[in-house]
Length: 107
Image 1: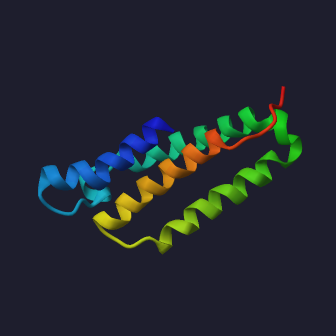
Image 2: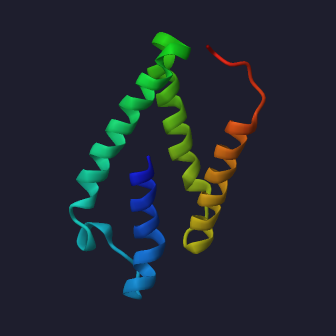
């Protein structure tokens, strides 16, 4: 996941500042799309493997629901730098809340 977040951060914030223009990923970074596709599939499979002891056979269903919910929620963000900032703030808040939420240990 760190690799995917790094690629998204670079293409959405650092590369436009470096190049001084809007980045077209298909033209500027043509190999990035297949590489991130493979990384996303590996992340999905390893997340299922990591969560399998908790949800068992429902793990792939839950992961698909979470993936599509997160993906489709991105369309409600504004475009440009404000949307990028809101994306990172929302992702950081979700990660913080998921780690600080009181819960019973599984093991």
